[in-house]
Amino acid sequence: MKITQYIKNKIERLPKGYVFTYDDFIGEVDSVEAVVKALNRMVDAGTIAKLSKGKYYKPEETVFGALGPDRREVVKDLLEKNGKLIGYLTGYSIYNELGFTTQVSNTIQIGRAKPRPATKRGRYKIKFIVQKNTITKENVPLLQLLDVIRYIKEIPDASIDNSCQRMIALLREREPDFKSLVRLVKNYPPATRALLGAILEYVSDDFINNPFNITSLKNTLNPITKYQLKISESALPTKDHWNII
Image (cartoon, rainbow, N blue to C red; front, top):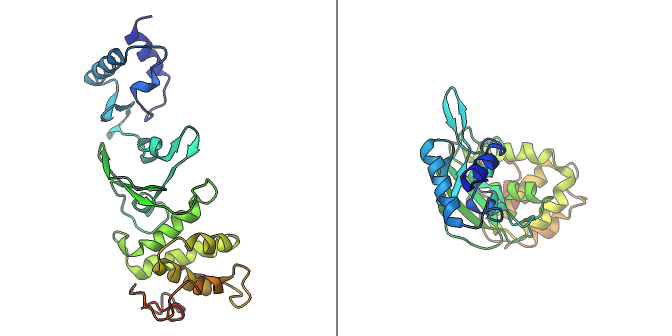
């Protein structure tokens, strides 16, 4: 079978929006140059589309035009490597999904263990934040919430008070995770620890005898430091206990 026909046949079996590179064809085809030429010809013919250098996808045609891949597909190689989780979507990538804003950003933010410069793929700008905790499938939802708390002042088209109230609503549903949140937040900046502590105090049914040892969290903070988050007392009545102004 000719190289071009082999590549076409394989691409036809891929789902719409799937992002692939020439590496997906190496093995059956020895010549990288031949694969690249075949893919570029298919781009020119409109059979596939180019996302960024060396990355392609099958567009899905709708009445509104061609749809690109979803954001997770765009950055999947930055989230997992050899079956191991190395990053997770966070920040601008999930504010809308978690109900903090109605805006959908073209910025994809990824949490990873090591810093990495920003890059661009298609219409998306990709930024990275350093996550000091070990990233696991189980703790990703908690890390996402802690990242929102950390960058709560940067959520687009949302007031601090509204964002705080939304976080309160989300954490009310995660009481079994409070102990893990307290453990994970200790690798975050002091302002993040203070805000989480204030929220947990507010939503906890038994703050004094809490099973997640919130006292240990307060002990990580400087008792004279003030955290200027501009949250009102009506939004978070416990803020003064944590020096939040």
